Image (cartoon, rainbow, N blue to C red):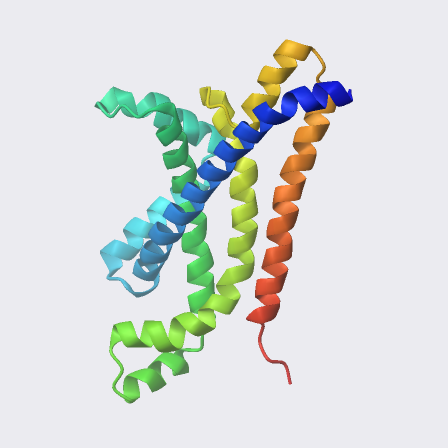
Length: 216
């Protein structure tokens, strides 16, 4: 068993690197797109709000696996051919963006309207109100669900193996195909995923403590 694990580690390390790379891209892209679209949902004109709402509700209502297959197999039908890696990243980013939109909507919506009205009364512009009044307070409420979403992105990245991408899960399956020993490798893979997500959970608790509200 130890020999099998030692044989598998170099392959799993390469797969883990790709898993983390996919997760990082998804987290960064979805954060940027989700914040922009979330602001549009809360403060934009009615047509924009409806468009963002339809996007968010539709994407969140589709299973991630179906979304991945739709992007990979469906987009070529309209002339858009993406490599399997970028198709997987796009599908996961769409799903996470829809979630970030809701995180931001809830966080911003929890800030009392009087805060924004007071900022407006002292002459702050819309961007200044967001930057100096709304976002600093909303960030504390946005952080916990977003960190949970990051761990979900790491776990969801295992689905990219279905497109033939050699991530951690695919690397495990490839080694199993050579050694014909499944259980030790699946246990090892589970421990690796646990270690990554546990580290993220520890980081989230530290961040929450750092930005926690002052309780009187």
